[in-house]
Length: 202
Length: 77
Image 1 (cartoon, chains in turn brown, yellow):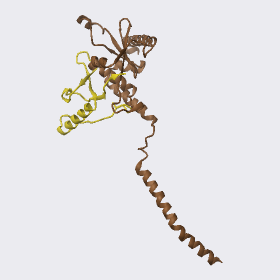
Image 2 (cartoon, chains in turn yellow, brown):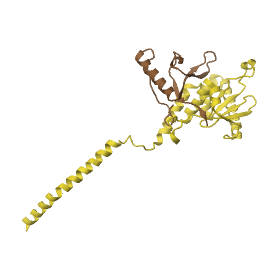
Image 3 (tube, each protein chain N blue to C red):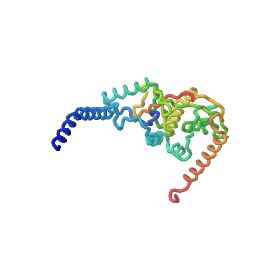
Image 4 (cartoon, one colour):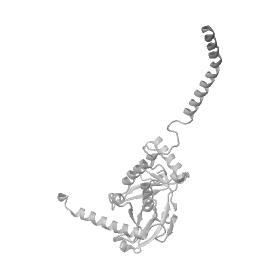
């Protein structure tokens, strides 16, 4: 009886061996294919830290390009003021700029008159991904500010020509812009007071 | 500046070394051919004001420039 059971078990093992071998080979092939096709770093998964790291690098780059006051302005207020280059008369060059721009990240550039605070116009400009990166294909916020800053300080006419000009209020709330101008004036007053305080009393 | 990524180092080298300068020129041309704008951050000698200088050819790059920044060209938004 025992001998018969052993013989039956042996026959079953012999018959099942090719099936088991084929299954193991198929499983190994599938695993190898998965490994070579896409390693853990090749998976196109959303990396929530990538944009944060890109923005951090962008802030460092912006800081290294603009002057200390402009950097402090961006850090504290969230925008940078860039002086306009053109003047109505040569004698105006001695004073402050006749007009200036407020540069926000991913928002239109706003032209205004520093002396009166009068808002002039919005210039809608963007720096699109030429490779067509879709929704993720836009510059980090600080890179967008730096691109506008570089374009305005190097070739103001060209960037203004390329921009779509609108009256103030199309994309940005004029009340918010006036509040930002007030914040800027307060910020400059505070910095001026701080500069006037002797080093020994700081 | 690369949309979606931020700052990416494209090439670096000493322009006084011929092979390295060739590599820099090649990368410069490639970026401009792809439609990027190139600018060099500078400091105005008189006022000390920081500004950028747009460069349209490799020869336009000031000899003392430490870097050239490429960024997508502006278009109406």
